[in-house]
Length: 113
Image (cartoon, rainbow, N blue to C red; front, side, top):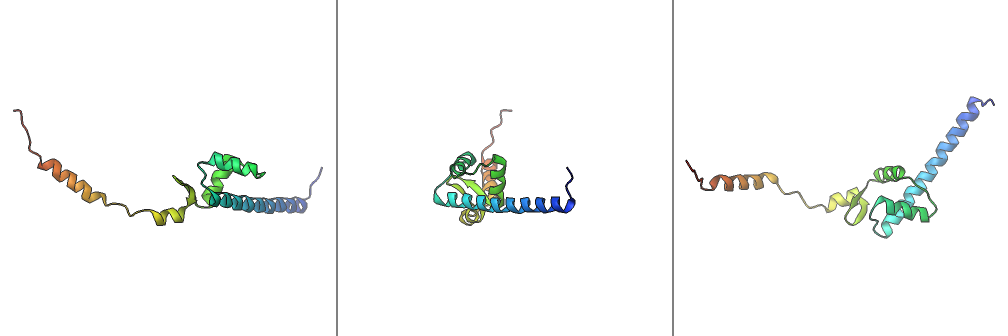
């Protein structure tokens, strides 16, 4: 069987474009599922997608979550931007360390010479 280059290129381009449509649809369904109720882990999300008729591998799901900038939190998957905005400012570790060192060196030293 001989396949002409232009026919092959055309069909590969069509398949790639079609995959892009499926990917966008799948990612939209992921966002819809996650906005409805918390999802504890990727396996639960994969099962919910399966109930919608979408078979997704763990690798694909992980890649989709990364591309959508979603991170796992104790409340389920959330947008990274929302998590960053809600995070309390980090406490300065240097003053805490300085205080601990001061307390350590201020203790009386017992010598059993």
